[in-house]
Length: 430
Image (cartoon, one colour):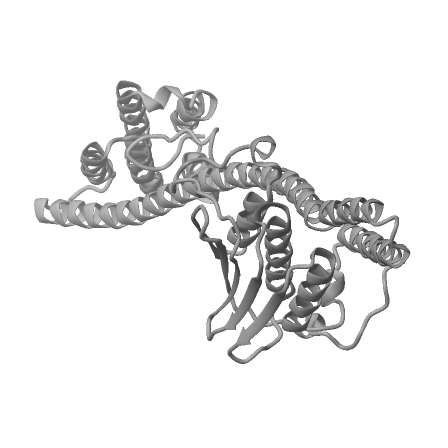
C-alpha cells in the first residue's frame, strides 16, 4: 500500500510498512460501509446503495488495486475529487454520512502534497457543511459549522502528519542502521582477512627469526668451537714429540668438543647458554674468558663495575654471545697480547666493552653496507650488531690499523622475570 505523507513511499527495499501504513487505506471502506448500512436499514434508497458501492469501488480501484497510480499528483487529485464528490452526494441524501469526513481528511493528507492536502481539507469541510440536508440554517450557523469542521480536519491532519513524520523517521533510521550493519559486516570480514594475513606473516617472520637465531647460535658456538678444535689439533700435531704437551692439547680438544655438543643441544632447544645455565652474567663471562685464555694462550681479564644484578635472559645471552664472538675475532685476526672485558651495570643500561691491543683494522664508514660473509671471512661483526640492535641496543666498533680494537655493546637493563633468575646449577642437556 501507499505510505502516509506528502506522497507514497516505496518500502520494498527498506523496512516493512508500519501498522498505520496497513490501516489507513481501509478507512474509506469502513467510513462509507457502516453509515451506508445504518442509512439503508432506516430508509431504503437505491441511490444510497449505488453511491456507496461507487465510492467503495472508486477507492479500491485507485488505492487498493493500483496504489502506484496515486503516486502521480494528477491521478491523486482525480481520485480525491471523485471520492469527495461521492461523499458529498451521500451526505446530501443522509447526514449520517458526515462521519465519512475524517476518512476523506486522512486520504487528503495521505495522498496529496502538503499544501494541496490543506486545500483538500478546506474543500472537504466546505462540502460536508454545504451538502448536509438541514433546512433553516442561518449563514452564521453554516460558517460556524465550517470552522468547526476545518478545526477538526486540521487536528486530524496534525495527527496524521505526526504519524507520517514518525514513520518516515523510523524508516530512515532503520535504513541507516541496515546500511551501517552492512558496512560493519564488510569491515569485520575485511578485518578477519587482515588478521589472517597478519598471522601468516607473523608465522613467516617467526620462521625467519628462528632460522636467523639458529644461524647465530651455530656460528657463535659450534663454528667457534670447531675452529678452536682445529687449532688445538694442529698444535698437537706440532707437539707429537712432547707427549705431555700433546696430551694437554687433546684434553683441550675433548673439552671443547663436549662444550660444543652441549651448546648445540641447548641452541636447538632454545635454552640459556651453558655458561649462564647456573650463574649470573659476570661469572659466565669470567668462565668464558678463562677458557679462551687457556685455549689460545692470550691473557684476558674481566672487570665488573656497578651493582651486578640478574637481567632478562635475552639481554644476558646477547652480551655473552657478543663477548664470545669478540674473543673469537681476537683469536683469529688480532694477534693480540692482551684482552680486557668490562661489564658495566648502570641504572637503565648495561654495557659490555671488549678491547684488545692487537693489529686492529679500518672499520667500514658509517652508512656503508656491510660486506658479505664471504668477503670478511665470516659474519661475526654483522652477527653481533644484529643481536644487539634486535633488542633496541647500540653496537659500536673502534679500531685503527696497529692500535687494537674495541667493541662496545649497550643494551637496556631489563630485569629478569622470576622464572629466569638462576636457582642453582642445572644439569647438562643430554
